Image 1 (cartoon, rainbow, N blue to C red):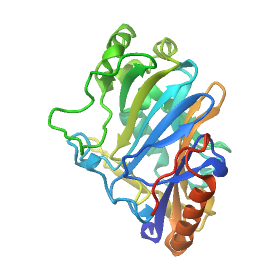
Image 2: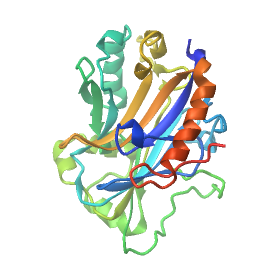
Image 3: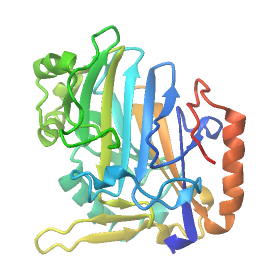
Image 4: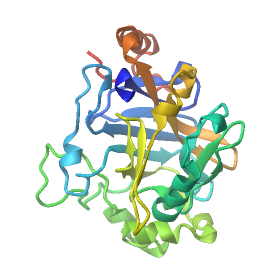
Length: 317
């Protein structure tokens, strides 16, 4: 059933469709988003991508990297706050503006227990609410986290690449810190390994003690081998006598309004419930692909490049 659809990916500072700009996955030019609270750059990669714009590469060298050979997608981003942001307030997750409780597939509750236990213990939310969502603290959810330089500091001398990587290798975020931020990370008590750092920030007091500083760049990469955007299926691993679970999400959305055929990734301030940026993966029926491609190109022209709240456009030719 999934082969009847293709993907479209958009990004913007809010949920508002008027500021959501189409982007081209698997290209290494980040999509820029600027708001009153931060400047962000977002790069989306999807293995074996089939979607809009038609010119999008099917894959990325990212998926040939030893650390990512089994991953199916990557949401890589950086941000530079325009004001201090407390880490306890900043969360990453998925949400919907309408109920999905009647569309949840059998096995969802079991799948969520596996996700909580094995993938992200900090994930919280209510999928049975009228406006459901699942969010976790950014610093306990994100796969890799790097503290960068602050405005006015000397250029970074610490490498973010392996010795055997060349200039054609995508800019892959690795756990750590820029030279000028190494002491900051150490004094903050943040473990050097991703798994230990994620566990460390499951403690509420550790989150409250860390601040994303105004003017300092922070880099992140969120990836996994569990969500297959081409099949719109969740593939969870098995354990011991428990078999693996594959949930073909699209099977339970077929025939539903088009708005249901979307997954929103949201970075937000949970204290104010304000989105900081939103990336939307939308399923488009193949029968509407040509019209959607034309509409996509029209959107890019109308919104223009470098709109302050909409980000920079990508090459869609």
